[in-house]
Image 1: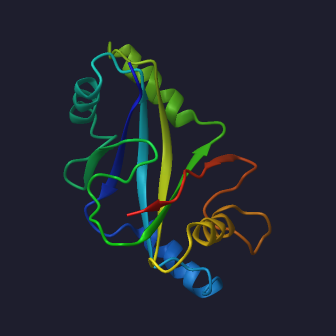
Image 2: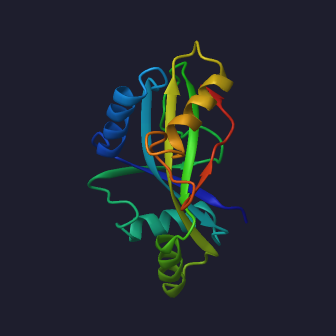
Length: 174
C-alpha cells in the first residue's frame, strides 16, 4: 500500500498566507510571488484500505479537518492540488516539516489506539508560490528558496532550517 496525502485549507482567506504575502511585498518586492497559498499537509503512511481509510479518519476527527471551516482534497505528491484551476502560472511547492514533530507522533498514537490501519502520520505545511508565466522555472525556484529558508535575521520567512526540513519538489507549469 502506498502513502495517501491530503491538503487542508481554510474556506476563508488564510491569515498566515495573507500576512506572509504582505511581508514579502514589503521586504522582498522584487522576489515576491504573484500568489501565495498555504495548506496543512497530512501524509498517512500505508493506510490499510488506502483512500477509504483516510476518508474515514478525516470524517471522524474534526481536529484534522473541521468541515465548518475547512475544505480538503487528496494530493498526489509533486502534482498540483486537485482543487486548483489551470491559470497559466508557474507554481513552486515548498513542504515545511518540523524535524522534531510531536503533532505527527501524537496523531499516529491516537489513530493506532483507535484501531486505524495506518503505519503513521506526517503533518507539514505546504506553501504554494505562484509566479506569472513569464518567469523561468529556475528563477522561480531560486526566488522561493530565498523567500522560504531563514539564513539571516532579515532573509527568509517561512522556515528555519535548524528546526525544520524543507522539501522543494520540481516546479510545475500549470
